[in-house]
Image (tube, rainbow, N blue to C red; front, side):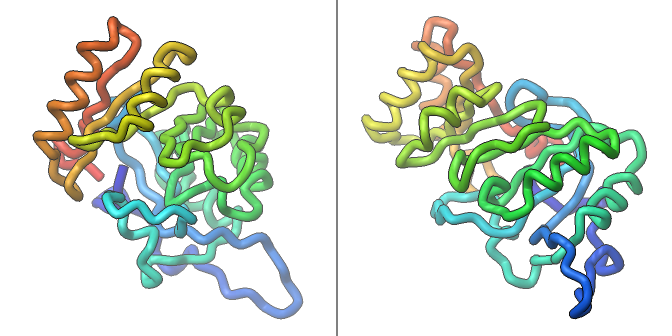
Length: 229
């Protein structure tokens, strides 16, 4: 998912100025917005997205460039994030922590705990790089890159989503085949060209699903088709 839109809410009034006498946990965030989930199991469900800034991976085909833009980086306290989410009303009951890479951010466990205490249902999308998933995350979408993350992260995932180019390597195809046998909820998603679908990647993803004997499902980033962030 990407931001922002008419539903986006990350004005400077939520940013914080740290004084020498206060040391709150600060989270590097580039956007907070509400949209419909467009990928995987929860497609079509209203979701509030908290997009973290920064990622240790540098995938050349990444379709979320704002997390690398220094101008989009805002430092927010946990309280400021909760205030921004509450401003959306009922549409923010389910919160997806995404990025960038959430697991690479310090203070993630504390943020998840505070979101739970504030009544939010917390989900996360991660590449699996950066650490363990903290307690309190109700749903984990693992979108593994190469080399693959530790097996424990795969086991923790509620769904696994592979982004598939037109010409995936044999190593990637092997990982898809393996986890389609070992995990009950595996998706393939065509690699996009920015915000535009890539026909060749789509054909390859469809072929993988058709050949999988029902072990794979197709994720199509439906938010892009209907003009949502």
